[in-house]
Image (cartoon, rainbow, N blue to C red):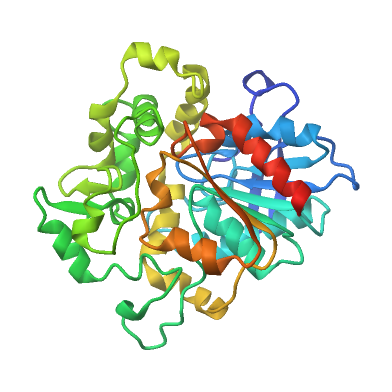
Amino acid sequence: MTGTAPLDNAVLPRGIRSRFVDNVNGLRMHLLEAGEALPDRPLVLLLHGFPELAYSWRKLMLPLARAGFYVVAPDQRGYGRTEGWDPDYGGDLASFRILNLVRDALALVWALGRRSVAAVAGHDFGSPVAAYCALIRPDVFRSVAAVSAPFDGPPEPAFGASNDAAGPGAFAARFDGAIHEALARLDPPRKHYQWFYSTRQANADMRDCRQGVHAFLRAYFHVKSADWPGNRPFPLGSLTADELAKLPAYYVMERDKGMAETVAPEMPAAAAIAACRWLPEAELAIYGTEFARTGFQGGLQWYRCRTDGRCNADLDLFAGRTIDVPAIFIAGASDWGVFQAPGGFERMRDAACTRMLGCHLIDGAGHWVQQEQPEQVIELLLRFLRQR
């Protein structure tokens, strides 16, 4: 993982640059940037999710730069060409906890010579990182865009209480043993993907799968997109096994299957792959090459921190705090991620963000909304940036 070079300009849209920034909270951070890094150009910071890269923002960066912003998208800790993180399952798990990921973002802002960010946007697992950036340091992160994953606020302090008492922001903590046992009693027996991602075998399941990393990622991106006909999401009634079983198998998996085996039957046909304009084969190859080189464990450590509450016990310090800077939520209308945590979307909309300027579900997009429908996402973001 050491000594990697920046991404070749040949694989990047003209106008997007690849480089490294040293000494970012112990990391040599790889980032993509667009627009001139001038003091009078406000900074927009874009944080990716799993299994993604800074490259996932390529379709939004140039339009934001043309609108007058300096745009930066890093490979986050555990991903891509960023170096300095522990790749071992048994390694330094605490470095992947949410507060340290927020520290990564703040350290990057400082390393860029800035003291404020016009907007921080986070997609998928990048969404809670962006949200905590805005919640903890609103003086630096002046507005926030949550993309695909709702943020329903920090957890209520447990301080000797049972997991049953866990409040908003503690989705994983509310998964007590009874829910896991009830999932295992379903027909067929099921398990939740976040707990599978927390197991030692999850990395090898995807990195060393029979179909290869590229084909695995093709099926994974496809099955979570609007192209897959099974994505017709709706709110779940409660956090129970019967309700969770309504989620697709890539969220609530069959107990005896890994993720690679789960998504393999949904591999699109060659004609569908050739017709896929939002993620053609040459662009998917960027992901395949990077994850074949690094494996998935870096990103999986984030899930381990979520399912092991000890890693994020310090989030109790922010119980009762709200995001008070301008906020927006953007997701695909075909994205089950909006509703996978029952009640989370509603709590975000109604309580967690006191200056919520809009919640938008975009037709023709699933989980990868900024890649599937970039024109609509950029229109919403630019309108939001003007409003704020």
